[in-house]
Image (cartoon, rainbow, N blue to C red; front, side, top):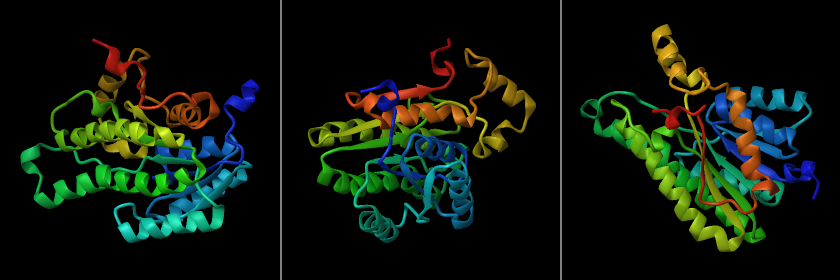
Length: 256
């Protein structure tokens, strides 16, 4: 296989959640550029439509499929539509999530349940439905976007960090469960990226400077810098990689 072929996703059908903006959009955009037909999902239909139009204008194949991952019926209906319209699924990227930074004692029971549902349970549901389609072809790529919060800790982030630790455990368990069916399961753990989701955190110049200074590269991640990792894990080049967390953080978690 040629070098270009190693990283080609030509002919693949990929589903990317939380694809309307930020890291999810950049992952979807890169997979489309690598040749995949990309299905963009999320809850904001207008934002997804704009994202799909941007990718199409760049020459990629992109389809908006709005649904709420926390709604079991909507999720099942979305996967039924994918099976009907595309004949199956080759790649799923679970990227959608939420964050609520505050001390644990300030969380209500409802807030705790919402965080766990969005960040953990919904990905179980997504992986389950994706694996059902992938097993029919005896091949597939499950990719979960976790976070460096899945292996380092900071105050006032216990619920989010716990969910991300859970995603790492889930990913490795799925690697064991679905490996015999030709399905790989891996994760990407981003560090601090300059995305819309981090605008509030980075609004204070001293906070942005402090976070930038914690990486070996002395800066925040640019959203497009997540793209290569996702395409790699989805491509033939990563055919013998499973159960792995690929950290994209500029060296932040390696720095003493």
